[in-house]
Structure formats: C-alpha cells, structure tokens
Length: 287
Image 1: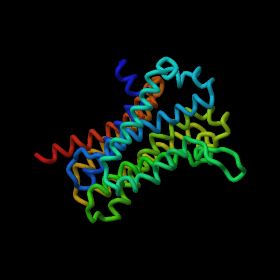
Image 2 (image 1 turned 45 degrees about the horizontal axis):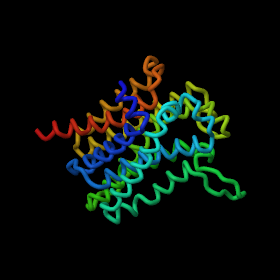
Image 3 (image 1 turned 90 degrees about the vertical axis):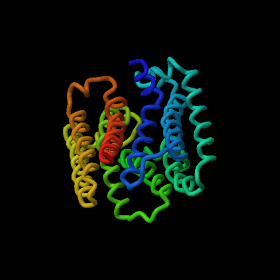
Image 4 (image 1 turned 90 degrees about the horizontal axis):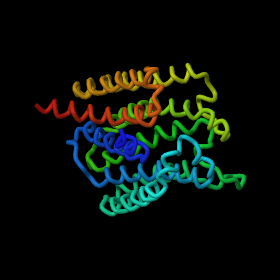
C-alpha cells in the first residue's frame, strides 16, 4: 500500500498512464509496441507538469499545504523538490535523444499545459491561467492528453496513416479522458467556486454531471466498436469493450467513490487498465 501511495502522490502513477496510452496508440496504428525516446519525453513531461501545478499552488498559497490534498507534499518536501528536479533533468535528456519532428509536434501542447498551470498576462494586464477560462478546463485536459498520446506515435511511425483513422482515435481518446476527468471537477467543485473558476459541475447538478460522464464513456464505446470492427481489428474492439465496462463499474460503484484514492488511484488507473488490456489482447492475437 505504501508503494501505491508513493506512486500516486508523486504522480509517477499518472505519468505511467500516459506512457501506456501512447503504447496503446502504437498498436491502434498497426505498429508493434516498442520503446522510443518520445515515451520518456511523455513520461517526464507528464511528471513535471503535474508536479509543477502542485508547486505553483503551494508557492502562491502557503495555506494550501495544510489541506488534505497536499499533505503528502508537506510531509515530503525534500523528496517533492527532488522529484521536480528529476522530472526536468529526465525531460531534457529524453528531448536530446528525440527526433526534431517529435519536439516540434510536442511544442504547442507543451505551451498549453504550461499556461494551464502558470499565470500569463491577460488583456487587462491581470495575471491569469488558461484553466480560469470558463468551462475550458476539462476540454483542455482531454485534448492535451489525446493529442500527446496519439500524435507522437503517429510522427514516430513515419507512415502515410489515414487521417480518418487518426480522427477516430482522437475522438475515442478524448471521450474516454473526458469521462474519467469530469468526476475530478465534481470533487473540486467547492474549491473551484472559491477560486472563481467556472466548471461543468458548478453549472449543473451532481446527478447530471455523472450522467454526462457515463454518456461520454458510452460514446467512446460505440465509436471504438464501429471503428475497429470496420477495420477488422476485432480483438482490439473487445479489449476496449472490456475497458469501458470496467471503467463504468468503477465510476458507478458507491463503494469505490467512498475510497480516498478514488480519483487519483481508481480513475487515473483506468488509463493503465486500458493500456494493459490492449497490450494483453494484442499479444494473444499474435498466437
């Protein structure tokens, strides 16, 4: 349990989720799963961004350290700063080994993620972050995750991949990330309201928000089924069906929702589950 808590609180857990989704994309694109420098870039960039967001929060608001959300950081300040340093060093090292095209493709989404956490100058000479734009937060997160975990494998493939195929994948990934991220906004509703942020859970009732999450997951399932049945990758459609049902069960379970690690452990873990399922079904299909 201590190892699990360390992986989750350090954000290594979610960084591994990004890597597994990218490997999943390799398989969806018809490639053999393999290790490439961009996977390390993705891992360390995710690790840095999520810890940067936390770092800016505790620097700009010292009282945040007293909240339950930041207790791990408060108790492990030395380790936390070391983690931030390692993520930067790891990212720079991986970037030096990566292809130029990969870095160019990653630049726009890297700027989006930085401006999501870091303040920029607004039109009225007031510092603001992209996450402060009404209702943009969850759509930005879903887009960034979809783009980073799909486009980088596409570039590395260096193949004439059908743009329609990429469009299908982007829709699937966006809807899946949207479905598992919306409950985070629900969890943060009170804090977002106090911070003056406008999110979907602030606008709508709780039961409606959950229904939207289920609907996004259902749309993901339907699009994935149609997509991979049409291209004859039946084993892949089955893997994503299993992933969707597991995710729905975890979203719906009141017992799971009551666990303190429901969001960071369970919901973030659905990305790892989906990536692992696709890998397992891929290797079984080779027999």
